[in-house]
Image (cartoon, rainbow, N blue to C red; front, side, top):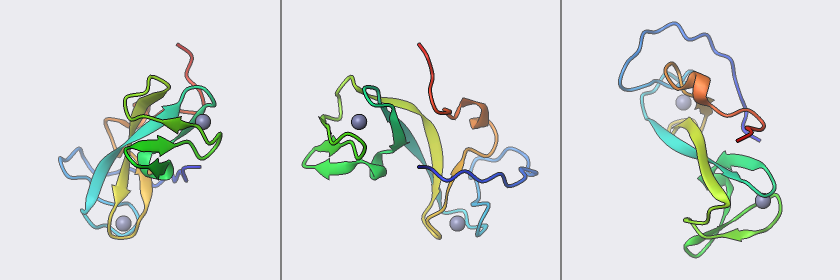
Length: 103
Ligand SMILES: [Zn+2]
Ligand SMILES: [Zn+2]
């Protein structure tokens, strides 16, 4: 599961988000993917790799990157300094997926 923290977001909007944990700016935006069939959602790094394909850690299904069962549902920020993952600081916060999203 993705660990969610609720650090107060007090800074104004900026192009390069800082990590709420360590304050470093070495943060990159990573896509969060959902395996539609079983409902597993996490960043792509959480899925196992099988060559060019990924493996769902929840149900062990092997999914091609372009598989329609694998869809991008939002974005998270990943700090390369301390390995902390957090929701987008400002503009994307309301778009980060919760447990389930009905079509
Ligand atoms: Zn950090
Ligand atoms: Zn799955």
